[in-house]
Image (cartoon, rainbow, N blue to C red):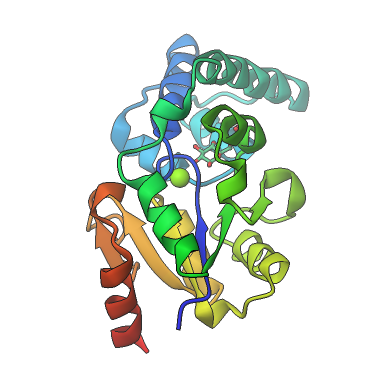
Length: 219
Ligand code: BG6
Ligand code: MG
């Protein structure tokens, strides 16, 4: 049965996916690059520089490495401004209860986030003690959809991937979970997250009872 649940951060535990969107939107507007929510879906779950590359591709211009570094830091400054005000009230509804329910059952928990800001955000949310291990972008070489980040978390928890569940709001994240050989829970749109084993529209719909059933039926 399930021995570990590994969560993505942005868009799963808290709504920082919206802050990433707003920060990229501001940068794209400054660069006169069209940017909407549909395009933003492609950026979810992937790293800062990879996201920037996708935006710059649409500008039709070329940028030096230094310019790219400067633009990436500008986006990060917008983002940092937005996350300063995060408090424990910004946990998405249901998520704290779900994690507590999991831990009560003796299941261990982890975080696998592509964000270099993840340690800051979990500190602001005051959820450090709810997570048995944390892997952020600074600890891995390859980003999602590569499974490395989830596999690193399973190793740190000492649980084999087949007994681990991953929870994600991004297509690239669900792909990373599946490539790691884990059970994937998608939070969000059915079409975008179709590769997940179980899809809910919001964290409030997560229940350990239903997770057990879905997991069992998939095995
Ligand atoms: C992911 C987000 O968690 O982290 C992406 O889904 C974001 O939108 C990425 O770009 C990198 O975050 P950061 O904070 O390192 O720029
Ligand atoms: Mg996410």
